[in-house]
Structure formats: structure tokens, C-alpha cells
Length: 498
Image 1 (cartoon, one colour):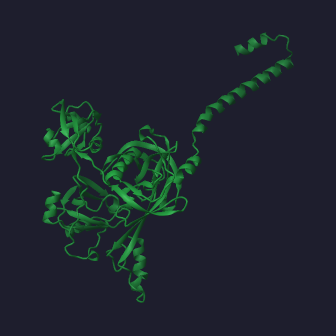
Image 2 (tube, helix red, strand yellow):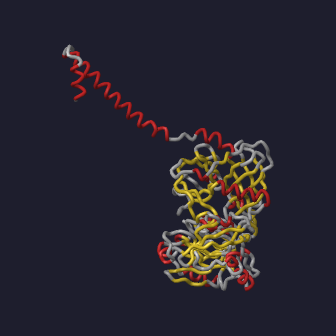
Image 3 (cartoon, rainbow, N blue to C red):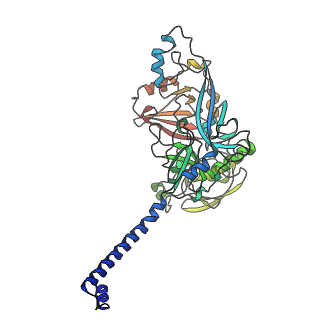
């Protein structure tokens, strides 16, 4: 108001009409300025909405479709059909299959099991990265490029602990991806996945980084990138790109109760994958360090008990006899706070730090013991290759060993196997027939079943199946499982995958 009055004093000779015109022009200029400022304020928001078209066009040509074929021989069949009771096809073939039509010859005892996945070319001479579970136990791996060419691939090596595999096709001059730095990823940043969900080749989906450094049960060597990108079966092994068109991860797992996309997906950081592929390319296997301790998370209550100022470190629950840790003087109750000057913020950090250390290397551990810090020197040992226990079917042919309702074929270990595994009792997982199950693997040892808070040690297949029969089909089944040198609890939702 003061500014307007001052303007009128400067223009005393203006007529009423002129004054009205000036007022109108001034108000028009004012609102034009307001609208201009609002438009400018909204422009940055509109610029943040990404266009993925160029990225998909330029980078999609380096993404491949992978088809893995496994020849299954003497597959156990129920009533003459290669389907489990939970398979929707079982009821159909039970009613309308070979037994319903005597003139039709019986089904073959050998058939091919095919699976689909994705991968991406990391060098022009044909090296391709994918997931280990995509090519696991495959008799033949076929790679299909975006130009429709197909090649038989050789599996150079696979590392189940990180779920990374390196395969090779005989070709040259291939388009390859550019690699990014996962450490520079920010939570909330846009990322893009390209793969073959359900076999639909070169499908592009987008989302954001939901979290970084995620630790998952039974996955101790990978700080996963969590995203809300739509990932489904068939995306496994495909690349995760940032908006600069650089690969920052390998899409590996989803969290789902239905088997499909539910907004939570996990990718292996590309720096972890490239370290694995480097070892696979040079030696066909991955060498990791170990010190021989079992650890657990430091809770607030434990931190208070040990006199720690905050929750941090890895609490030693047991020390393997004659292990590098035992020789270095580590004790049960020690809390490892640093490994070679790298902080151990949480227990899951330690396996990664130790695993990435070359065996034979001398390392310094800073531990918390009796209310004070202490440095210990340890010579890192080498982690043995993942043990896959194979039981004895006691002379029974494969078709005589049925799977239980969890889709598991189990066997009882021999006395020698018990000694090697360091167990008193348990059941060896011989086969996992539910293709969608990823919580149990061949070679796992089931030690106990937990029902209504009661933990029962399992000793025989009949006993286990009896306990399972007493569990309602829609109830959760919790198992204590030994895998390699570690033990973990596995809960199967609703008694089976939904």
C-alpha cells in the first residue's frame, strides 16, 4: 500500500482513467510475476521425472536371455506322473493321463527340466554374468541375444555363497555393459532392471533404491541393494542400472508370499559380483578367508551387559578348536569391533570382511573384553568349499522315495556322515522338488522341528513325517537347519510356499 501511494505522488497529473489503466497494468504484471515464480518452482520437480527410453535402447542390447536345461533321470513319479501332489497338473493327469487311457504308452522315466533367467555381457569376447541358481546343475545352457542369435554357453564357474555365475559364449564384438559404483548409490535414487520375467525378453522395469547394505538370512557375504523395481521369476541374473546407464547390481532375489512381485527385491552389488567373476575366470572357484568363530548380533541388552556404549560389533558365541581364532586367543564373549581398521558396525559385517581377505593374510582384530579394548593378531585361514551332504537311500530306487508335503526328499545319515557333519542326529535334504522353494537346499541337514514353542530333535524320516502330519497344513513350519558350518532357523510359511 505504501509503495502504491508513493507511485501516485509521482504521477499527480494523471486522469482517473489513466490511473485505472495503470492500476490494471500493475496488477496484471504482479500476477504474471506470481505465475512465473510458481512455474519456475515446479520446473525442477518435472525435470526429476526420468525418461528411461534412451537407457533401455542403448543398454538393452547387452542383456541376454538364458535357458538352462537339466536332464532329470529316474524322476520319482506319483502314480506314473512326474508331478508332485501340490502341482496343479497332478489332478488333471491323475484323471485324464495314461492310466485313464490304456492305449497311451506310459510317460518316459527321463525328461528335461528347463528354467529361464537373464544375464548381461561384461566383455566383448563373450563373458556373461548371471546368478548361480540360474545355471545350477544344468546340462546345457543356451544364451539368446537381442538380435535373435543363440549360442551354447560354457559355465566357467559358479559361487553359491554370493549367487554369482560366470558363463562364456564363443562370439566376438559383442555389446557390453558399463559398470558403476554401488557405493555412490543413494537411497531414493532411480534404478532400472532389464530382464526376461516369465520369459518375456528385454522387459524394462523401474523403481528406486529402497535401502542399501541389507543382510538376509543365510546370506552372509552380500550387502544387498534393496529396490522396489518389479522383479519376477526370469529376471534372475539380469542387470540393475542407474540413470547413467551403468550396472550397479545383479537382480537376485525377491521377497514374496505369492512367488511374484510384491515391491521388495534384492540385487547383488556389482563390485561384489566382479570380484567373484575375477576369481572364477582365473581359477574357476572362489577362495575366501575364515577365522573359525560363530557370532551373533549385539542387542541393546547385550551391549549394556558388556559395558559397550552402543550396539555394535560381532559377539563371539563359539570358537572352533585349533582354528585361526583359537590360535589368536579369541574367546567366547569377545566382541569384535574392528577388523584391519574397518569398523564392524553389526555382526553381518564380519563375514564379509573376513571372507574378502586372502587366506594366509595377517589381520588385526580390535575386540572388547572385560570392559576394555584389546588388539589381537590372527592369520586368516581358508574357507572350505560349501559342503553338500549326500545321504544314502539305502538301495531304494529314486521313484521309491516320495517327497513329503513340503516337497522335500529326506534321508537318514550314516554313522560316518554324522561324524563328518558333527551331528548326533538329523535328516539330510536329498532333493527339493518344489521348484519355487528357495529357503532349503540340497545338502542341508534338518536338526529339529519346532511346534508351539517345543523343539523336537529329528532322528528318522518316519518320525519327521509324523510330526509334520500333526501340523495343520496352513500352519507355519519352523526347522533348525545346519548348512555348512552354520546353523539357522528356517520358517516355511503356511507349511508350503504360497
